[in-house]
Length: 270
Image (cartoon, rainbow, N blue to C red; front, side, top):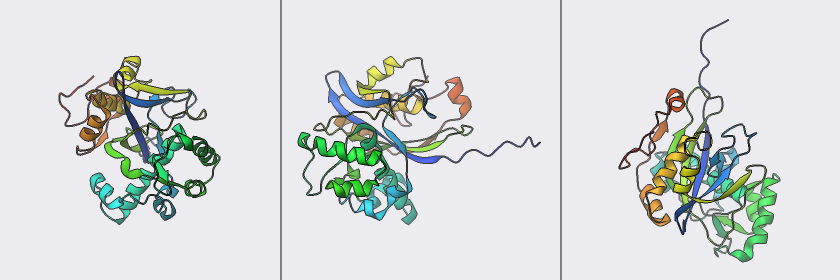
């Protein structure tokens, strides 16, 4: 029997999104709480998101994002070659798709470029049901006369699950102004509850329990809580350089983690 340790699991590309809006107590973020049976982040408060699918970078989806420029987005993500631009496109489209699946909010518009409104609620609900039932995203969008707008996403952070974990993700974090004309509602298979909380409220209600809010989520809440408006948070986070953050599993277990992104001031630690 060999004592040679197994190589680390290769992280799977993933996207997650901070939906931001202004509330009476400060900048609010939309949270989902994962079911206790979840294989990853069980019972934790998380932002909507998930793994990238191969279809997310397909040309048939990208033509439904007419205002999205993969070259510009890829340059910010430092994925600036042909393969990187394709990966960048997939990360952005996955972010839009996951938000739609998990919250019912579509970051997009009608095919005539008209903004979505409350009058589109029933059609969007039908489109979401079709997507959750397994209809390809591109087909859902075409059938319902919809476009997606990944260009509204600001790329704000990059976290990689520590080596040694059995389930690992290479996750790009995006932030986006919440479309106020759409109501968010979680999908029961993905979350047990959901809601809008200020970043400060979310930190208080999970204080001292790292199982309820994983370090990357906590770091992003700390960053958002520094700002008085959603626009200010988006402008700040969307303008900073983004470096990949890979914590060691020992640091996670011991709680030796920064609670702010590199370059933040003042820096915070636990």
